[in-house]
Image (cartoon, rainbow, N blue to C red; front, top):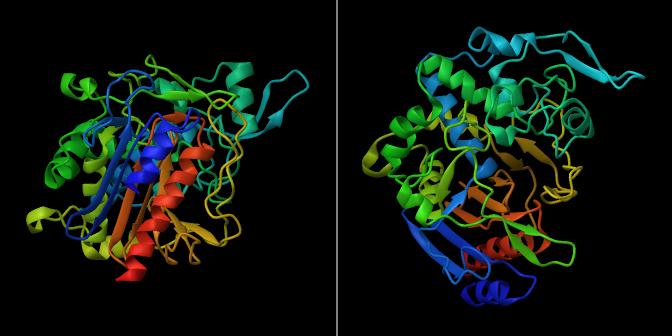
Length: 388
């Protein structure tokens, strides 16, 4: 893998830089790093480089919600409007009229926090859904990247609970956690997740030290070349701590979070982030007859068409993708995983006690070079397992 990472970062149309790390239940078993934090900068990528986590934030927000459930503070099946009244005001989008105005109606049932965790509440993203893209372009719907309440007050794309669709559900889940705890999401995470796990480089706002180690987001152009975008930094004092995408982190920090799931919720020293029964419940696919579908890239600058393991049955847990059949990489059925928009990828294999994280900062999502590099990394890990 060391040689593969060097090759990937030396190609003209390869990666600017990458950090890849593998862990078992006890600690890190492989770390690889290559390239630069920004293409052509001369600033070497290091294992402590800070990345915009994007949607790898979601599993951490899900963990914070599950802690509320454990303490009896949150009922997953109660209307989420009990905790965040604004979500009860949202209507279902049925299309657009001849004048282009949205056609709205009342939903048939309430959104619940369980639906939010499972991505069945009815929310989408404008870069994965044509109707949301139209709301953004024709009606000024703000992007979630603004970190604003207005960005979340979108109509639902279908009646709550009727199907799976990936979207801003976990941002709303973060608001539920804030309402239950009476504190900002970042403060809750710091006290209840980051400090117990020793995640000192994970936060919604960059410290000066973190900023000095920040990797730059790059845009992959049509000719395959990479253009650094140093101006692309998430809002540092946003109206909302966006539980769906807003964290910054390092690979070693995130691997500590992965290891907690491998250890049935245990932190170093025996403290608990989650109880074993909660973990066992959280990692099971929760979709009732619905299907996890491919993600169509309707905004090409942000995402290509994307799907993990096409043709394999997939489910969704709190809040991970679950592959219900063995994957070509060697990942067994029942393992967990997901990704972040700038081509960050991870998996958690509780059966073999193995997990990994692959971090780059490239748009659009599902970049062919980075995604294939990640799959090669995961495959190499399972070859090691098979050779034991």
